[in-house]
Image (cartoon, rainbow, N blue to C red; front, side, top):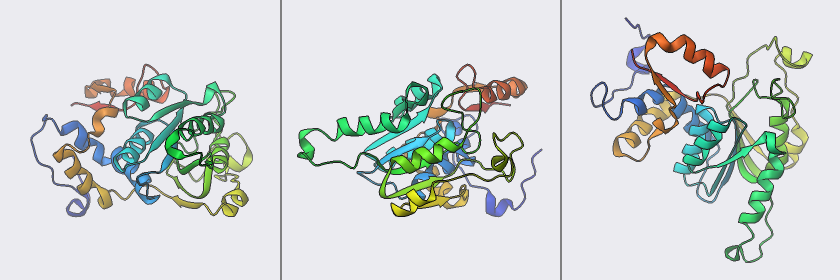
Length: 264
């Protein structure tokens, strides 16, 4: 049995039947697809934009997918897990492994090569990106020691990478307190951010998670028409009995667990 408070406001009517071709796509409307699309929408990703996304979990991947749906010219996704980076490429984005070098420099180099062709007529590029999304939050892994968490470098990298008048979305989870934070300020839910660099570059920052009702009917219709297929990020389809083991592997980033759908 399932009780849904305020169901008349929160539930979305869906066509089709259980187990049909849309089922796995529709289930992603409950969170990951709407959140990923929300990130791209609130910073108004549009044709010609270049986007850097930090974090290739299901939300980060679907933010990249949504940026591509909205016409972004180039989308970079920063992570270190091979299966996630492989999925990034499958979605039409450019994977960046932060364990292989400074992700800011990797993206700048890619941008420089892309902007050096004859179509740009020797135009001198700014070198960064027009949009950035933090899809990780407080659990970002350290660049120097992947076994540790260190979320500070992500915001610092975004401040270095974003072009003047750029737009940034912060949708990664940030709890009120993090007892496992690497320093006292993070334990108290406080993050040091290079505000002066962002302010002086006139960067617009949008924060907060998704309001599903704002997007879910639109995204549902995109699924029905074939314009969107978010289930491309699903890595495993398992029975309900397998859920505890699946969550443990997902949390440990093992065996390519990216997004799990449970089939009771």
